[in-house]
Image (cartoon, rainbow, N blue to C red):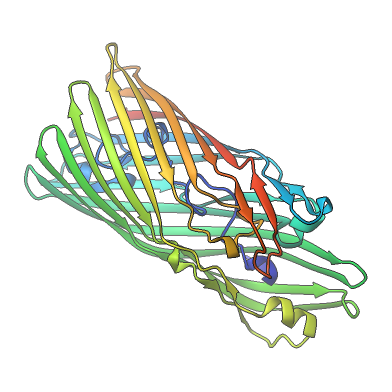
Length: 413
């Protein structure tokens, strides 16, 4: 497959839009997780436990469980108001996505269980059409698919452990165009992909029938995108350079600690998770050929600092079983941004987020269940005063949000 990578665009390729958590992470991959705002670790009992907490597979019903979900994501337009000149204002395009996911859990095999999940844990898109924003972020899109086979082992009636392999495929497309008055233009385009591996582990402890304490960890995976690089400028005369290039982008490690307790028909799940975004400290480019053109060298060869911080999320989820085979769910999350002000850019104007969610499940038959969930992600306004030299941002981002709807079916066989 031919790949083309625009180098300047790659300075922020990893940040492909406002995701549903800190940075470019999307925790909500199933109906239950969406309905509980990601608080679906210790309380995970459906087939999606193969992804969220594979150690819980040891406590599952002794049958094959399968779940198929379709997640619709809508990103409203983000507004940027520049504090220097209204001609530098902008607003991003609205974005809409459909993301299918599936999960599978096996019955018991001598205290072993096997699971499989297919998810889209990172990505989305951000596009700007106005002159100032599009100079660095005309279009950024990142799609990441993760296949995650896993296995659990029941040590005894109180402890279970699990592990799995993260098989991650990432593809990216970037396009941007900068015009400098009386000087010329810079343009860039990119299509690239990568396939990488990592691991995940989990432990589940059930001191009583009503209590579950779980810890899960997903390893960092560096997406090493490489391909053909095109750099072009009309500054000082038209010039285009084609060469090979590569850049590495992290899919960061995630640690989750969860406590769930069931009292009567209700189960509450309290989750703290940390995403280790500090892996994203800078972007460094490697080229097959030396970049000798002075303009291209100035803009495309320096390492781009990011200096992201590890970030925490605090989640609470509730399941409540009603009569007639109906379960209602709700959730809330406060999610901290990892992006420091001095490296904030148009590719991801991230900020602290408040997530609110609701949902329900209904048993259609003894083996078949359907569910629906809705989540609203509100992001705080973000003001940048004298931002980094690379972004030139000096203003306020507002109206950043996300809507997520999930519909799914579970079947036991």
